[in-house]
Length: 96
Image (tube, rainbow, N blue to C red):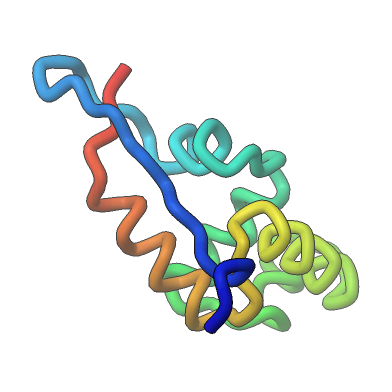
């Protein structure tokens, strides 16, 4: 792994503040659009691309395009890495 593959994230947390919704956190931390957030949350909960497309009333290609955007914004390249990142992000108590 060379230095170009390394990524660092720093989170500053106010433990006395009220925690925010996971979707809001994903949108603010990673800059995900609402549709991308919806796909990310679905994948993190075990939904596959075909199921997500059916659930959201869009084509599988639309979901794949959204997934590519999610990968770019989260600096991931595989669904397993994305799901792991999202699981860690959910546990971080980012505060208002």
